[in-house]
Amino acid sequence: MDFLNALVAFLNFVFVPAVAYGAQLALGALGVTLIYSILRFSNFAHGDTMAFGTMATILFTWWFQSMGWHFGPLPTALLALPFGIVVTCALVLGTDRMVYAYYRRTKAPPVILVIVSMGVMFIMNALTRFIIGVGEQNFADGGRFLISAGDFKAATGLAEGLAIKSTQAITVVVALICVGLLFWFLQKTRAGKSMRAYSDNEDLALLSGINPDRVVQITWIIAATLATIAGVLYGLDKSFKPFTYFQLLLPIFAAAIVGGLGSPIGAIVGGFLIAFSEIMVTYAWKKVLGYLVPADMAPDGLVQLMSTDYKLAVSFAILIIVLLFMPTGLFKGKSV
Image 1 (cartoon, one colour):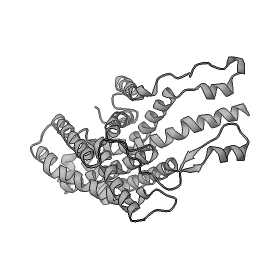
Image 2: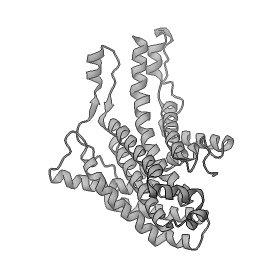
Image 3: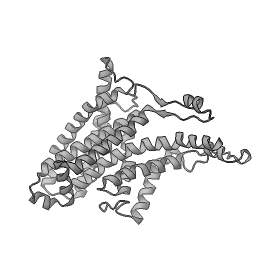
Image 4: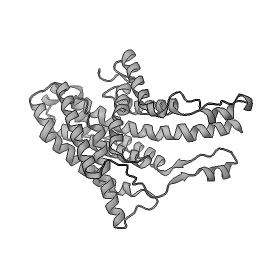
């Protein structure tokens, strides 16, 4: 029975949160790796693209809620999500036309585009803060729990309860749908095959008649869509605060690089690797160990390897280790 309680505690505080967080990081890392693979630069504005898309979705959510429109037991934000995606796509396409297109025409080296993306990052961050403010915004509504700890205890008779938030379940389902659609698009559609050809060999793709402007536009649209979805899912699961999304840039980049830049599968695996590492290193294992060891050997301390204040350091450490021993990542992506 104590082993089952330990297992439930592990699922409740480590596995379920890590799966939801990993799905959010994986969607973010997919956008980063697509832009790096096709546009050939690291887009430092991706975190703030997530923040902007989430902000746009929140504004539509508040409007729908004021009109009395709801999505039943599901969050109203899911109803507003398509509108947030459209606004974000318009912003990134406008940014590309006004900023990045000039540097592509002049054949600027990737490092210049990286620096330009930092400038875009600061502008988007300021725009988001100006519109919605710097404070924390909670926009989740609908049913709160898929399974509550009390119901689980009553059904199983265990001392430890398992709680699965509806936002965590929605995150996993939406992420699976997005990944499935993305792989289908890249593998089965003509536009997806053009993107892969352009990524593999730009000169050969141009000789075969592929329109580079169309490839670039589709790439930005997919990246903006993934960023908005990832941002909204993260905001629903936790809360929305613009600066938090700026901080998410490190684990998202770490996930993309650890998996292998340019590899969609690597981005997904990297997202879950970073998420599980962050949560397992910063989780206080006292409760789980308390069920597994005799009472007289129960730990007095929290048995926490690292404070949650330093969880971003975990991403950084994993990134350094992988770059030292596997510079192209776990799935042999492009060199950094």
